[in-house]
Image: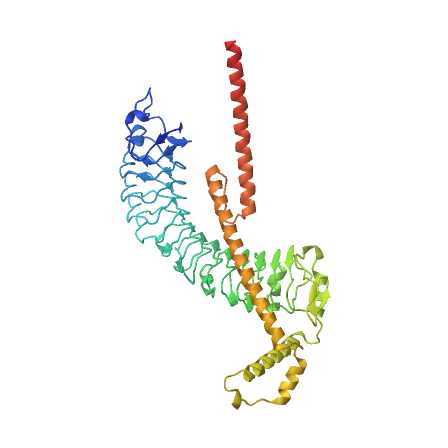
Length: 514
């Protein structure tokens, strides 16, 4: 290995062979791994690889690199791994990588690239992995990876990509296109893992049935149905949180272990009866509009984690054989009799959240969850909905433009008004205005917090890549921070030991001189 330190080359500086030539070996053919530390190279010329022609690992990261000459890699026929991340590259010359016939891995993360020239990787048949995260790319041309039959891993997350036909990556196993602007995704036939969260995806286009796909992350998109999921029968993890899905039924994914459907518009949910093994262990249905979920009771019994909070669920039907380890039930419309029955078969220690007191009118607190007493729970809710609708429609008829010809049933109106809350229109209007103001404020605060969290996460990813910490696709910011701190502690410990060794060596030399 060869590590250069304190090398500084300007944009217009002419670099000669002597600049990098080893004194004993003019062409340093024994070196295969080259890297820089504490250096600045604004422009890369062909001289470097001309001196070290047998380089297989070339690390040119964090050098403030702005320009790469078109012939910079003409002597790089042996290079297998090329790392150019954390620089200031805004464009790449066409044909730049043509001489890198052995190239397998290329990383261009954290640059300023806005487009890729056609045929950039046309002469890299052994290319296995490409990573270009955190750039300004808007489009991946259909011909970009045409001549890369071994390309298995592509990561272009955190760009502004609006077009990328993933189905053309015939050998791809893992693809990350999260945090872009895609509106549809065409999946390769052999894909194993796809991360496509935080886009504008409305449509998933399978390329026939795919039994290789195990993990699919599509949160924060605009999907309204999941019929396409049946084309991936061996899925194990499916994240569809924060979409626009209204219904899930007849979903048959026998190997599914984790299903996230939080923050959608679900009115109904029903999975096809799973095999006896019941592999599904995590199910998140929180923040939806569900009222009835008893048809999924058999599925719920086999779960380890079940999240049902913030719905309109009235009854639940868990058996005493359930194996739940975590369950959330707060902020629903529970029937008290049913809730008491269910609390008898659920361990109190596994219940994660409670309702805030006091409960709304007509409801009571039962084991820190609000519920309503009723002889026929669903009939009671139905009658309540009918009453509210009647009051609304009568009030609307009174406010219509053609009010002089409106026929109003006074008896019905008096009956409706008698059961309606005793509040003046002005009071209600003031409450509505106050609520709208609160919602606007909370929405702005949520957007600001989400942006801040995204920035923090991106900075963590940046520093994890910079300091060599391992990063997994589903790591939370807290997990990433812990990994980074551990890595930095280890780095600091090594440097501290090096400093002590150098200090001791210096003292020994001083003692010898004296």
